[in-house]
Structures are given as C-alpha cells and as structure tokens.
Image 1 (cartoon, helix red, strand yellow):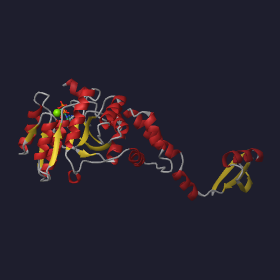
Image 2 (cartoon, helix red, strand yellow; image 1 turned 45 degrees about the horizontal axis):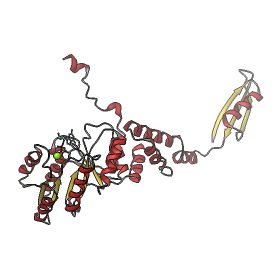
Image 3 (cartoon, protein in one colour; image 1 turned 90 degrees about the vertical axis):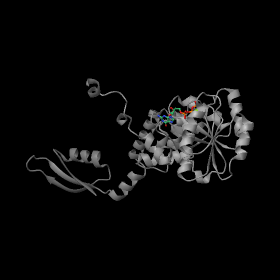
Image 4 (tube, helix red, strand yellow; image 1 turned 30 degrees about the vertical axis):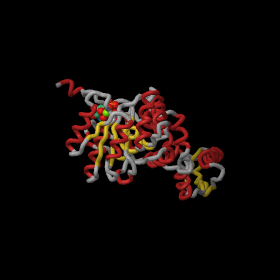
Length: 329
Ligand SMILES: Nc1nc2c(ncn2[C@@H]2O[C@H](COP(=O)(O)OP(=O)(O)OP(=O)(O)O)[C@@H](O)[C@H]2O)c(=O)[nH]1
Ligand SMILES: [Mg+2]
C-alpha cells in the first residue's frame, strides 16, 4: 500500500494531482480542509504489492537492459563485430541477470568450447602450428616444462629446419629439462622419429611458421599433420585485425585444427581477434600465455576468465605511456 497526502487549493485540483501520480486505481482515504491555507488535504492510497513488484523487477526490467548494454559496450571495445556479439547477447533472453560477468559466462559457454590442454587426457602427439612468430616454440617449451613437472616421459620434436636458430631456441629448454630434442626434416623423418618415441611419452612437435594464405606452406603443414597422426593445435597471438584473424582461424581449421592456444595476452588489450578466430574456425579455447618468459607457463582459459578479461575496464588498464612524474625525472 502506497499512501500519500495531496494539498491543493480546490478538491478538483487535488484529485487531478492524485490521478496523475497514483493513477485511476487510487482510493481516497480522507478529505480535510486545510485551515492554515484555506485549501484541501486529501489522503489517497494505492494498493501495490511491493513483494511481487520486486520479483517482477528482478525478472525483466531495465536492469537487464543495462547488463545487455554493458556487455555490448565491452564487446565493441574489443572489436567483436555486432554480427557476433548481437546474437550472443540476444541469446541471453530467459537468463536475465543483472550480473554482467555471470551473463557473459553464459553467452560465452553457448557460443564457444573451452578445452584446456590437459596432459592426462592426451592420446596422441600434440603439434603446435600457426603463423610465423605466434609463439609455437615458446608454447612447446611451456608444455615440455609442464610434462616434466608432472613427471611424464617426454619426447620433443621440431620440424623447424627452416628458420636460423630455431633448433637452438628449443634445445635451450630441452637441455634444462634434460630431455633430447629430435630435429627432423620433412614428413618421412617425422614419421621415423614418432615411431621411435615411447608410446607412454607426451610427444610435443614444434613446427615452422606457416603463412595461412600461402597454399604451398599450408600443404606442407597438412602433410606433416597427416603422417604424424598428431593433434594440430593453433598457436595464435592475441591482438590484430578481427577479420584477418577469422580468416586465419578458418584456414587452420581446414587442416583439422580444433583448438587454439592464445599467446601474448599481456601485449594485446583487445581480444576481438582471438574471439573472431575461435568463432570462424570454429576452434575451442585451450590455454593462454601472458609473458615472454617460458617459466610463467600457460593457464587454461575458462569461460569465467575470458568473461573477466572482456569486462576489464579499459580506463583502468596500464597504457605503458610514461607518467608526467616519470618524465620529470
Ligand atoms: N609478451 C609475450 N611474448 C611472448 C608470449 N609468447 C611468446 N612470446 C614471445 O614471442 C616471440 C616469438 O615466440 P616464438 O615461440 O619464437 O614464436 P614461434 O611461433 O615459434 O616463431 P617462428 O618459429 O619464427 O614461427 C618470442 O620472443 C617469445 O618470447 C607471450 O605470451 N607474451
Ligand atoms: Mg618457432
């Protein structure tokens, strides 16, 4: 029940105020003459069920629209095209929540798969593939470290006989891990190296960077995937153009890639490209790295973590620009 007192010079004016404010359902409880002003004081009441109203508000109201706006704003910041963010967020109807993070977790789970690289569940070698410089060798070193920490037998192979210093880059880590590095040149040597590796070993294969838009490089990579029977995992550097990333995701998906490690989260502020690549593949999100240091490792990317990354307030992220104080020094 809402009760309110209306004062006016005439009954007609007071009644008009009551109708405007409380509507036609208002009931008049009392009418009094106001001795001090010579006008009238009318006490009116409106029967409302506050309890039901509060539930109705929680179910569907502007608060939910605000959540939708907040999510769209975050997706816009990351450069996620509306053709992707609109259906993701529209699909939330019926899951109305005022908690943006919880809502985004629901939307992300619906649209994407999350499949962390758990060494326990591997039933075939892992082959790290991707564009030049995306972080394949560093990811191979991180996975090798993870296998060593988990006391697993390890076999590390590189097919990168192309780039100067590529073998040395990886052997610097395999030496520390006290495991050998098998360097192979071409599909036949790869097949032989795999035949010699222990069946129990976690086998990690590093590859030469492949330009996704170069047919002969992709054909050579397809052949390596084919002879090895390995699971090809895309290593994708966060940041960059969203449309380009979607094409990269599709090109590697055509070779049988189904999941993706996202590197350089520390360098990229916008995650639209990673989202676009995953969506176009489609590719599942597996792990992420966020440091040039191998020792920092990789972490599984959960829907909750991705939601939190997408909802970070851009105004509170470090810019890397020197502060006035630092410049004054
Ligand atoms: N800041 C940052 N740097 C990274 C990350 N992951 C890898 N890097 C750096 O990125 C550079 C390239 O990494 P690599 O692992 O050599 O990349 P790659 O895909 O093997 O390169 P190619 O073999 O030449 O195709 C190196 O300097 C790494 O230290 C990351 O998560 N954050
Ligand atoms: Mg490399």
